[in-house]
Length: 125
Image (tube, rainbow, N blue to C red):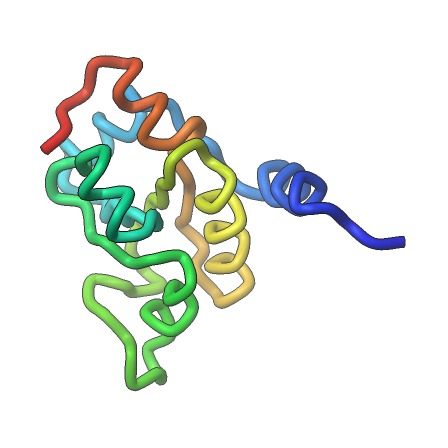
């Protein structure tokens, strides 16, 4: 039996911590979390970005997160709190599950993505 994209997202969401926009804002304000934006560059241009987020397109996540990869990017560190977001929560939940499989133990995603962030009246640049 094969799985659909929706099946994979639902499975990932059941395995990872989903946060509200308010919870993400609180963690960012504490200075203890890194927010990673998984959307494509054209999505950032069209819809803005959350201030201080780090842009890593979803297709590069594993390579940027792997300290042994020549494409590794700071501030990825398995000991840090990493919160992922995308447009609506699908890519970020898949990405969070992938990071967990890579040994990241303190990872979450913004449930509802930047759409939920905007609906909560949070800042965009």
